[in-house]
Image (cartoon, rainbow, N blue to C red; front, side, top):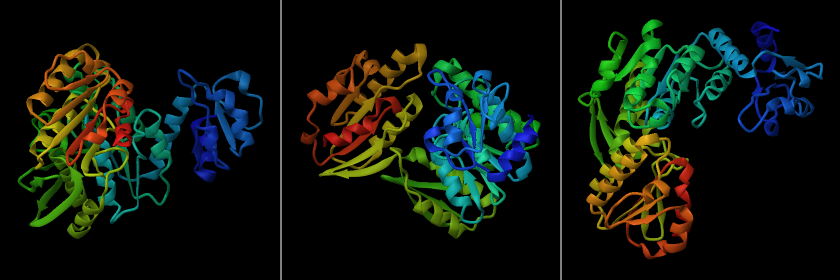
Length: 419
């Protein structure tokens, strides 16, 4: 069965499922495989739970009239998504970057949805599976698609672009993220710039932050839509970011000056797509971050900045720089290990540990195996969350402004339960 035939089946209900625990009646079940699971084994269960057809790629499981045997389930999913994207014939905006891409995507979606019926990546489902699932969630009512693209190796953004075929693109920044997979910062720049290469070769347009020299350099030759800090002015971030655009003050609920660029991009993109200034202002001012991303939480007498969704050397640095600028008589920092840094891990953790202690915060807590190898003074260092939990009484920290930041695997949001 070719893609056109599978698409005909998909078109009946426009439902794709990959998890038998969440089967919807009439869906196509794609039996994806991973290191620790084989979806082919659950094809019959998916059909019994209401899936219309199950797409499999192992002959031994082709035992039902409604199983469809293909050469590769994942590639079939990706081809189906690309075929669907071509039928939609709508503008697709894709974005990637080392830091801030999910927040920027949410802001862009909030702004554009004021005027258009948008469909955007849910959460951070931005990989080789998430991108096709995002595209396949769009239907004839979708007027603009917003697709987030993540990567930790070269050629992954290229693959996502070939599936989504974006008309527009934006790269938030180029930082020290996934250094192990990319082989260093130069690899990060090259990998993320695969979006620019696609737009250049397909006559697409790139939104470019004119204040970012790397964006300017990497997008050379691409049809660009520029924005800058003279047009969209940064006012302050104490703690919430406020900006001014066309003499209108926009007061966000996002903390940290590092979120200025994310907000500016959403304003620029909204303005390009002719969303009214009043709607842009309302969308940004009403957006509240969730899922451990730059959230402000009040606990007893403390104000806590929870930024524990992810971390890398670049995002750690800007978070600490911003935290230093906040007005508070008592500042406490909890930092967790940064992952996927490869051979640079010791150096990068030492650099962040030095930065945090040199800022002379009232207390600095460093948590994790990588941080435990650093040599620092004036910091409390623990090789695991458990050792930190067992030897630290967070209830003794009062009347303070607190920053909690670490990689997802550290799950530092657990600290909230200790206050």
